[in-house]
Image (cartoon, rainbow, N blue to C red; front, side, top):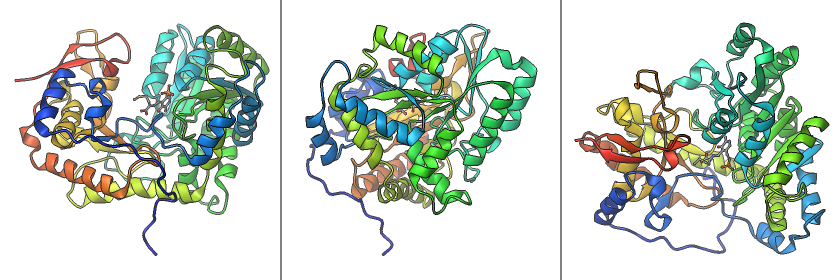
Length: 457
Ligand code: PM9
């Protein structure tokens, strides 16, 4: 049999409200042309994020009932700690309410003015927390990762030579941390190879720089290693994951991704002193070290989700369902980041909307066009999310203008995805009719969440 089917049955469903095009036109205007400001009810297919949007399994729901809500030392914490230790091999495990809470704690201690945090690519909240600490985040992604069309197996890799050169130029003492994001979210959900993790680790070790993994999508990354890197074909996802983490000093994790949880995260590390500092900060803003801002039932859901996500039938279906969208786009020559990554399809908005200049945000235009045409909500990953201003006020753009259509885990079926492909095609066929945008309001950090726009005439 060639068809890879969903390795689950559906037990509980949520209705979708079908808005009309006319309604959506008014909704977009009311939302100041920012999809983050649209009510979820007004979205037909919500591909804004794969974060916290997974369908939990019946086992996870059962676990929610078992959740031990004791303030200190709950059984749920110890079940959570056991699996995180099994996957990461790290002895010090600190629960947090989500990924960015882990980041805030870590960078409050390791960041600061005059320091650099180097990465294959920092995602938005990670970069914001690095910068909020006063440190500077620098992305050193491999060259093939900066080009949407190049097909390569590990486009999420860090450029190891550029890392060496940066250390030689700035001095290891100014680099507080290297962060490898797996998979590389801003770079198209592309995986990082084991060879790259090893090489980056060796460089970090030689200079006494700690290496952390941003582990949100560790299982998807491990599955790509199994598929694409010689020597890993017959290893289990747990073995590959353990090997990935064995090269790191610590990790931050948003359990809202590869743990199928609707909320949660953690920090894990090997250094007892660093762990103590993290826990001291945790108690001030997150909670006691055995719950860290989460209910016992959340810890339980994460513990079960972490085991479920390493199931290869699930990962085969997951990666295949993303590829399936890519194949539909290929049939019409619609530009996207190739090959498809782990959790999303990234439309190449720069090429798709090549009549809209970068300073008029082609990604925002494409996002809004998809919503208008078919009620699909995606997210811009380009100059809105990562743009900065030069001293003269001109826009400094990231290497690519993308629109990410992130697929929530275990939520949508093949016919939902067929519909998404039809909407993308309909927008592509009339793309010349869509206009760009100008910003009318932006907050100082993470502007994409709350920015407001107007259509340019
Ligand atoms: N990622 C995403 O949609 C949610 C926020 S932006 C819409 O991709 C990485 C690689 C992430 C990430 C969140 C976080 C933060 C850290 N690293 O959202 O705080 O992709 O749990 O995690 C989002 P939290």
